Image (cartoon, rainbow, N blue to C red; front, top):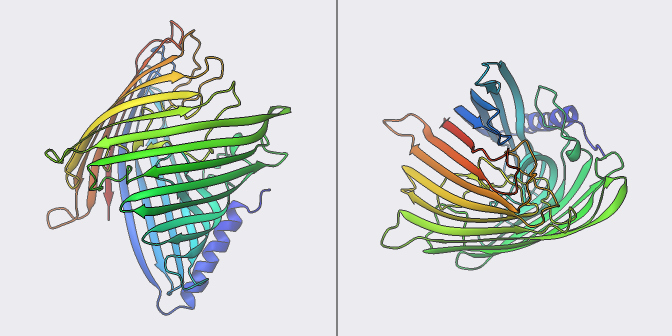
Length: 430
């Protein structure tokens, strides 16, 4: 199923772009460069006060957008990172790390029909949904897409063939040899009210880790809930997701059937337009360990507080996944949209099934307590923006994310210490 190699894909797309540029007298190009110094502090991943790490570095992101003619377009988005490796504060160990990678490289052809906004795209691209729980990942793909004023969508096939970084680190085993078929559409049925339908089928060959044959379906309603510029006083979000199929976790194929719900509501009072308050709730069924799991392309990051800031929906410190989970949140934000914004989010987490396991990228341990309460989370995110102008030569913003997690009775008595995470990003774009 490894249908194309990393080197072959890069060489082929680069050759096509050069050929198109040589045979077109109307080729135009736009270049952008982003410089992102950052700092990250991470404390207590094992909830036992045994580790603290910090990392500082800089990320350089070049972008090139090529328009060869009326029908052909190409895009390149790369990055280079230089960072101190995660350094244990207590013993002052650590080192340096530098590598380059490819985020996007694709070719787009809009000559199939005269329908505006329609094209076929091939290459490596970031496949992204606004909610972060369906797709938000760089992947090699071939897809048909359309984008009109009231209706947009896509359908295609995709596979993760490599992480496209020069450090030659392999893909995680559970992401190898998986072929994905996907489709989605979003229709505006009344003024700023949308209905969204999504589908994905994943099939792993005999070399894949769990040999999955899984189908996901999603149905959603919203009115720009994830938009920072919505002019609605009340924003809502309702999504129902389901998965069915089978996999082979331990030699014997088993059935998988599960569902999830994602609900959000936000109010912006007309008397205080800078203020937004909201609440959201997410549920993922358990059924042992055969219940709902996400598509594998999710990031769980979104702009859900009515600001421009994107951050983890299930606590930056915990980074829980939508698996055997109940998550309830309340939040408030203040924003001028153009100059600064700040968000405060408080959350509570529970297990649906004490024996079905728990997935969280922010922890290095599993719950070993007797209860179902995972704990509480608190996030404070602030951003400051500067537009390019006479006093500032480039677009820039500074963003801080501070997050803490208080473990509950789902964890053992010796796993009850505060977990914290802090990050600082200064992003400059020319």
